[in-house]
Length: 496
Ligand code: NAD
Image 1 (cartoon, rainbow, N blue to C red):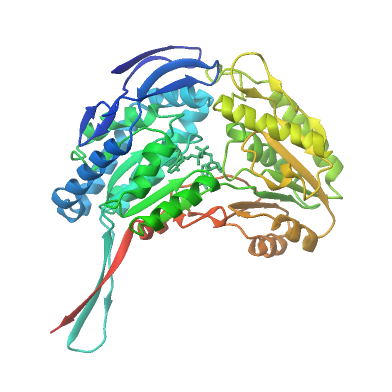
Image 2 (cartoon, rainbow, N blue to C red):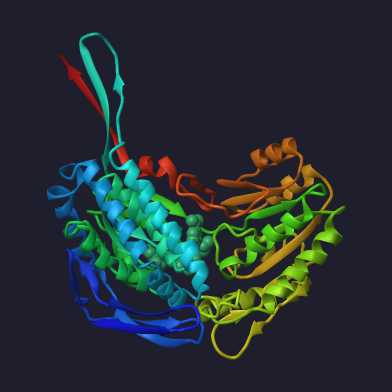
């Protein structure tokens, strides 16, 4: 089955052809048990297409293909230089089709077309290029113990890596996993989110065009409890890299422990503090705070969703921040309309979840300063929302909402805000706005988070590590750190 989609929008006109089967061992196949997933357009709730839903039997075929490819054509059998060339070619091919990928992402995930193009797809291209450069630079060490011994280390791939991706940055996060895995010589069984499988499926065609040998990357859309669980439980999968919720992350770790003790990298949820001190540059702080919580409609794991504002700047900050949120609320609309700046949540489930939290905030006694409601009758739109008068114990302050909902808390001192900011089970990101360099480093050092931003928020480069502390996960993606997480060290002892 193939989806032939014609985009005829203000932002983009063009065609896309996406195979809707499973991509296993270099070929398109139908799921053995024939299940289908309905893929919807979040801007209007209408069906775009149906794609194959893999089950454990399909996952097993994909894993066997990946295992064979690892042992016969990939791994050390394809030298790093060649793996790098292939990754570069993949980057070039995505770039040649950048608008088509952006349009598919906008259609399926509800992102503004320009944002998908200049953020998600451009970011993925940069990631493939970055790891193309690493592929021939994976080196061990020589360790001397005596004149007569030659001891050295090898950084070897795991073999088959299972990769499970969420729906908020489908193509971009996929690149964080596929690119370092291939650079280091692993083979891949990748499961996109059942909500947003289209760009992953379109990518499969580019794998063939770039010369990735059959079986090296297998793409199996499917439901988490079926295909996802089958990947995490499979005894021939040596490593699993998972991005998604903390709840599912626990299941992934349990499955890994129950099966073959596979290595696990988890990038999970967050409730990240964004701290604005009295001496912050107000205009910058407001601009970044709005970006931190409202970009991608709040569906960002590292979103600055708890905003702590020092008492001296509080009134001025709130005046400008609420104005920014209102302005965004006035430009809610279709992702392909160049004038709209705030699209839909990704699904009805997410819309209901976000609205549930907004209702909880109201019930718990927080004040809605801006927004607080759905928007329109069609699609899954939620108004950018700001809650004030929030108490640390409230559900909206403790739990990840994953929507355009900021909670604002006033504070007095540096010590107090460090305590408040660390009062969470999560530890993904943190941001600090201040013109005082000493305070900036002191506070970010004290905050329990894997990523810290000073006078900015949610900035990104493929060379920068993306880490997670506490219940936000474990392990690091991106940068040279991902090279370590996709390799294991062998110590070789030689007696000369
Ligand atoms: P989710 O946990 O529901 O699903 C993520 C993926 O896991 C999907 O592909 C899903 O099909 C699969 N899955 C579900 N159950 C599974 C199971 N039992 N075994 C294996 N796989 C299973 O999360 P979501 O709703 O897609 O994404 C939102 C969540 O992801 C948020 O909590 C967000 O914070 C988190 N996230 C984290 C990062 C990060 O880097 N830390 C990045 C993006 C999103």
